[in-house]
Every structure is written in structure tokens, then in C-alpha cells.
Length: 287
Ligand code: ATR
Image (tube, rainbow, N blue to C red):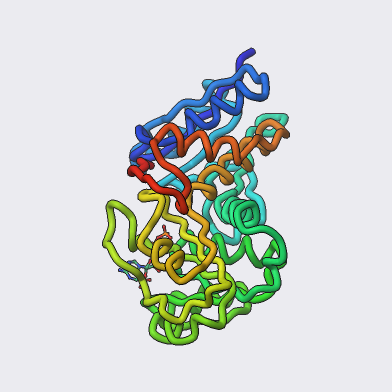
């Protein structure tokens, strides 16, 4: 029987996940489809019951349900448990539901694909201390990155994330001053998003030209942060790779196949009239 998968969220109609997963199903000769399901806040329990009844084989979970779905699952993997956030649900043999989180590992995969090897020895600084920051910090630590520090407008929140990695917690002012110490700098705040505030979360004048600068925002693809980092000579990693990789890791959990991420990234950029962040043209990507 044809299998089917879904993404649950609100809003969800502009999600690129259905087109991405359907392309991967086709590419890998799998008879399956993937649909967006609009699930308003407070109704995720009913949605889970409905998906089980209707025979979905797995689904992604996005805003605002990543935490709210946890009580409706039978088990969750250790990273999702630590983060208290699930973005992927798999149906296990016997009908049990397992939650996992591929956002942080997706970022690590994207970083390593774009920036190469020898990264684990570099000192990492994460800007921002929300859910995305915490997932990335944990995933970097689990992947063997030695030193993961966090800076944030509200230092207390940076302390909470840094406590999980054993790294330092810095204010934005301290981080700006000491930026040259870091070999990888990761921007996780909404500053620079097409729907958020413009500009930079902190000044990059002390950024080392040998550093790797990554942003998790992909709308626009080339954020102010990446533009400023590229101007200092840094290698830059845009946020589209994280989106593609988190999807690829979900696809692997469902099918056992890790799909082609580079091809998908190129395809999404082409479809939307973008070139690479280091390229010439850009157009807004919708989430
Ligand atoms: P998510 O869970 O998606 O990562 P979030 O929880 O809204 O997002 O976290 C956003 C992060 O960006 C927070 O660390 C926030 O700083 P505070 O903890 O001080 O609120 C940070 N942030 C948001 N707007 C910012 C701005 N204009 N300048 C600097 N940091 C900002």
C-alpha cells in the first residue's frame, strides 16, 4: 500500500517540506506521498490520533507543536528528550510512536558539508540562546565539538545553554570584543530574518578572517550577518542547508535511506531564483 507522511504546523501552507520529501520519494523509487496538515495550537493530540487512525507512517512537527506533541508519543530519543522538542515522529512496528529531533544534527551535517573537515577542534560561539541555539549546542557537543560557548542579549539564558555544553556564557558586548577567539560563529537569533528586525545581533569587526560563519536563517538566504562575515573574508554557511539536512535525517529515519542533500539544496535555490550565498542574485525564500 502507498505510504504517506505529513508535516503538522501552524502556519504550514508555505512549507517546502512536502515538495522536498516527494522529490526524494521519487528519486529513490518509493511509492509514498507527503502532505502539509494545518494543526492549530492546542489540537495536536487530536491530530496525532487522526494520523494514527488514517495510517500515516511518520510525520514532521513544526511550530507551535514541537514540545506539545511529547505527551502523545510512546518514546522519544535522548537528544529530543534533552531538548524537550520533537520535529520527527516515526511509526515503529507494533504501532508505537517514536519522537526524535533532527534540527540540531541537521545543522551539524550542513556545516560539515559546506565547511569541510577539521572543524571539531575549532572554538564555537553560538549567538542566541533560544530553542534553536540549545538544539545546535547539544548536537555539536554530541558530535564531538570540543568547545561550544554561547552569547546572548539575556546572559542568564546563555548560561543555561552553555551549562549543557560546558562552554562559556557571554554577553553580546563581551562576545563582540572576544570574537577573534572563535573559529566557528553561529547566528541563531531572528535578527536578519525577512520578517524580523534587520541588522546584526553584534558587531563583527573582530571576527577572524579564517573563521566559519553560519546563519540558521534562510529567508533571506544571504543575511546581513553572512554579508558582513563574507566581507571580512570568512567562509559562510547559509541556513538552507540546515533545513534540507533536518529533512534528510527525518527521511532516513522513515526509510533507511539518506537522500542527496546537495542536489536538493541546488534544486531549491534554482526553483526560487537564488544562487549560493556567495553568488550574485537572491530572492526571498518562503518558509
Ligand atoms: P528559537 O526558539 O526559534 O531559537 P527564540 O526562543 O525566540 O527562538 O530565541 C530567540 C533568541 O534570539 C533569544 O536568545 C533572543 O534573545 P533573548 O533571550 O535576550 O530574548 C535572541 N534575540 C531575539 N531578538 C534579538 C535582537 N534584536 N538582538 C539580539 N538577540 C535577539
